Image (cartoon, rainbow, N blue to C red; front, side, top):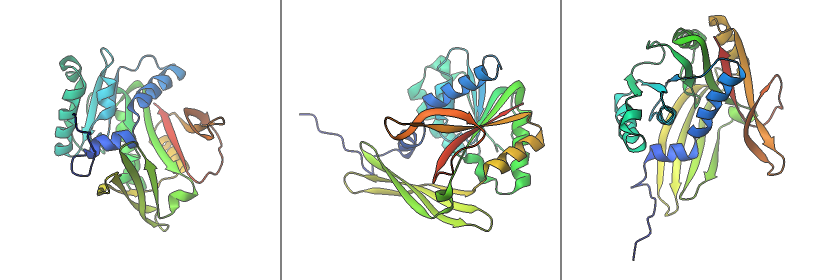
Length: 268
């Protein structure tokens, strides 16, 4: 008789858990292609994924024929993890179009691409306005003429609170912990924890020291460094299910919700 596999803190892979609970790489690949089509920018062939960690988006991107991805991260150890995972997910031919590059996304230069990505609020590691603008300028310089820069952000009045939110998944529970927040400078410390059905836990699987940037601040900085147009996309609402939908819409205003997630699309 085959024994039932139980996911626990001892045998779980935190990067796999992260992907299951936080990322939707299929959606993000589709969103990139939609933004190019909507803005008449042609076909997006190559992307640069900044702060890539295990490079899940880049790995998904190269599954499409002839497309290339440059995944940038400052941590060489996490890039080794990314390579190990990529080898299990994609073919050798696809792997040859995935470039894992150690470097600081703040100033790293590489071959110009159609799209630069900074998702999962990763660029919030830059806490000063001049540093944020330096990163945005570097992103602009790494884009081709028809390039698009895609970022995400979260906010709402709960974003300023110290709180924990738990989301139940099939074999584990994802815990988002806004542990500390300083309203003087909007600096925050957050953690991701994982809890398992057998009672075991992985505490502080991931730690984030960020500044909570507002959409007006982000938009202003993008335009100041030279992006021609900046659009905000907010998540829609599914009235039948009474929950957020998987669609995002370009908006000029939105409700002051307790919590929201949005995308910022900046055109070169």
